[in-house]
Every structure is written in C-alpha cells, then in structure tokens.
Image 1 (cartoon, rainbow, N blue to C red):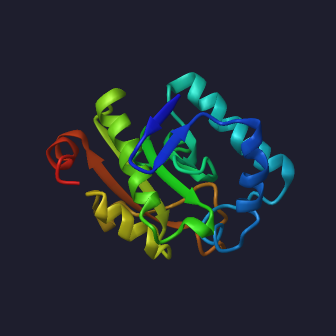
Image 2: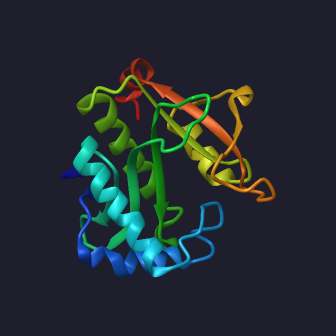
Length: 186
C-alpha cells in the first residue's frame, strides 16, 4: 500500500520503521498532546495495531517517508475510532511527525493525501479529527484542511483519566461533498 504526494510517501509499515518510530515516540515535544507510548512493547503494539487495521480495513496510520531521501518522518493516515463516543462509529484522520519535520507543510500534505484516499478511494462520507483542547497546532491544521468545529461536540476522551489535562478533546468534521468541492483549490 502506497499513497504519493508531491514530497511524501504514505506506505505500509516495515520492521525498519520500528526504531525511528520509537525515537519519535520518546520525544517529549512530539508526544506532548498524545497518549504516551512509554515502553518498547507499547510502541511495537501501536505499529502492530496499524498493520492489523490496514489488513482489516484497507487503511491505517501509515508510515510517512520522504520521497527524496526515503527517511522515516512519522505516521499519518486514517483509523476507525476505537472508543465509544457520541460521534462513533467514525473514521478519523490523524498525524504525528518527528520534530525535524515540523513547520514545513509535511503534515498538511500527508493529511490531504489521506483525506483524498478516504473520500475518493474508500468512498467514506465523513472523516473526523480530534485533539486535545490544548493542541493549537493540530486545531489550526484541522481548520486549514476545511474541517468544521462545533464546540457543542467537544468531549471527554473515555480512555484518558479525568485528572489528565488532555482528557478534553475538540472534534472536527469533514464530509465528502465539501471535500470534493475544495480538493482542486487545495
């Protein structure tokens, strides 16, 4: 499985991705707004989950690499939301990039490729995104992707403890028709 954008490849996971994914997952800045993957087993389980999701559903949070260099850059893609909430069942778009690749438009480019796949290849009618209320970078990106936010849909993540400041999540949505009408402009 491979998706291509101008500078990027979104592809199936390889064993050689495990080490750079582990290093990225140990970076406190990368993980600031994400649930921690603090052990080797947890990091391997996260990748194994993606591989199984790809096999079952035809998509996952794919490994992201540079077309120019082949360097592993992070993970971007689509997932079935794996918890119960008012908006589930749903498919979400998500991203996590290693810090050297921030602020260069890579996450946006990869997320657009994932959305294109979701709406045009998988024929999904809606894709959501959620992030910690505190995660301003992801919230700005969701808006730039054309996703809409209604604060009445914000929610407490059921898998994050009540005392955790990341528990409160914002929910953004994008449906297929607006995507199709804006895709050529993006």
